[in-house]
Image (cartoon, rainbow, N blue to C red):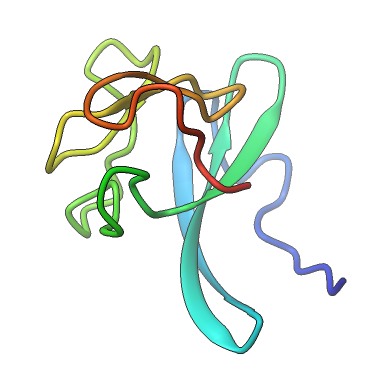
Length: 97
């Protein structure tokens, strides 16, 4: 496993995200890093309902209240800490970390 530096501890404030690119099994992918209240998480930027990005290429991943990630296309809602879809067409599926 190759490690890559995504951000410094001071680069993102709580509730902010940053997109990044990586390769998995020879396939280019896009991910996003998020700084939460007490931790950092990183997920593949791909909705579990249909394989499209969660954001509309605008870097917006959080709901307006900042409590969840969401898919701007289908409205699927994910718990940030676990990546679990708690509402929407892919309920009970999880984002890939």
